[in-house]
Length: 159
Image (cartoon, rainbow, N blue to C red; front, side, top):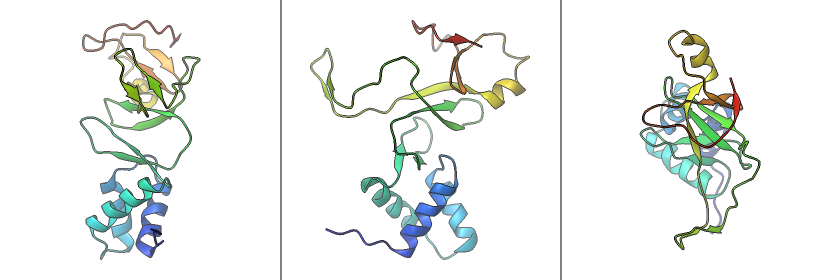
């Protein structure tokens, strides 16, 4: 079955590509400024098709709206607990996670989605005096030790 490339689909794709990790609502709001007749349903349906056909990636963000990504190559994401920003980050642990692997439990994994939670650089800079903890740095993202997230074995670069 061939997927038609409609004007609405083109608008959704261009709006998603013009923003950094937008939600479906962000995309709808951007398009509605110029095309007020477009419906949320049209935006959501077209996002589904664009993800299904590999033209956008969907980021599942626990406790928040899914985000969409124009960067399709292998990379991971950091989500700021303070401002909600979603940032691209490489996995600095020295080894890539394979797409397919058998876990100890016998579970066969055929994909994965890794999201780091912490504080982005902008929020860290604006709240530096409030936070005495020294986070580990992963690219432009910091992982902080808290009661909810105790120290891990990762020995990253100290801030």
